[in-house]
Amino acid sequence: MKICVAQTQSKSNNVDYNIRNHISLIHRAIHYQVDLIIFPELSLTNYEPKLSKELAFSADDERLNSFQELSNRHEISIGIGVPIKSNNGVHIGLLFFQPNQERNVYFKQYLHKDEEPFFAKGTEQLYLTIKGIKLGFGICYETLNEDHFLKCFNNNIDVYIASVAKSQSALNRAFFHLENLSSSYKIPILMSNAVGPCHDFISAGQTACWNRNGVILAKLDAANQGVVCYDVSISQTRIEQLRISQASIFHLDDVFEIYNSAKKHMQSKGLQQWVEEYPVKSDIQKDIVKGELYILLKDSQIIGAINISDEQDEEYRQINWKFDDSKVLVIHRLAILPEFQQKGYARYLMDFAENHALEHQYTSIRLDAYTLNHRVAKFYEQRGYIIRGEVYFPFRQIPFYGLEKQLSY
Image (tube, rainbow, N blue to C red):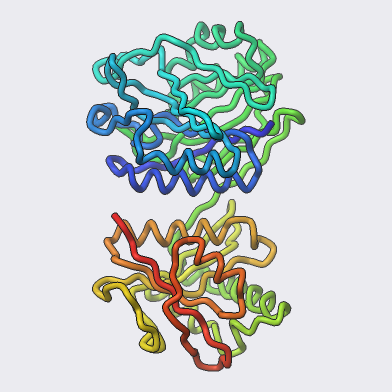
């Protein structure tokens, strides 16, 4: 069995963005063929106790259907931190989506004194068994209570998973405590923490995994989103941290090398999508100067780039677009280093671009795709882009599809 703990940076009072962000990270876990992914405490709303009543979900909320669909389609179980309504009030919950099953929820049982004015206590422990591995769960403050852990341990769990939202000072205590529990009771422990601003603190990340001897196998940094994947059967981990940032002129040579490598890779497959005259270094430099180029970093290596702009090429006039021209985002020059292609990184960049469009109130997105690059055209069509016609660009004899997607809010 493979377990993934995610490290997220959620936005306060922006559930739609947080849902999209969770889905993007779930796809990273799917790529690594994990059986379960767990998110931090209140990850879907950010840790904001004062907003909990306003933002609380029912367990069957239709806004969460996309998680159930992902669970069914990819046979992955998903545990998401949400404020959950019940007859007793609003709870801090872990809401579980399992393949073709009813949703399950665990309510936090031990509340910090600062949480008591806003949340009701849970009364029952939840256990899941996946592929023969029994799992026990704790949410933040209660994971520091050994009685809570012992309740799980005495019910013969195989792995303990903590879903938290902790500052650096609280995290220091948690690391010491969880390491001791792991080594004393000979049980693997995983912890999922958030990064970035929360209620009245900065969540410090460092999502981690300990083996049954209390040895830390993996730990993320304190600033960026990512995942830790743990294979229970062989007690091994792998981590992935991705970061997207605006490119600076200092990145020019590295980014241009990505485009050159992608161009050579396409040409080796007989695809003349990019040619000697395009893209050239001056194209990439202009993108950077305009603030339109974004880079994807895996750990510290630049592995991809994308141009996001509201400027449409003159050639786009050849297309009979359907949606309103009032505010259109245009995507150009999406490239991934060849050795990292077909691993879901293009999806990650497109998720970012579409989130950017939604955050900035664009009405639709337009882009083009080489007509002979069938895999890429299918990639965009699966994301909801519709072919509106064909467009010819300089130095290319074969046309490109013009594709368009309307954004809904």
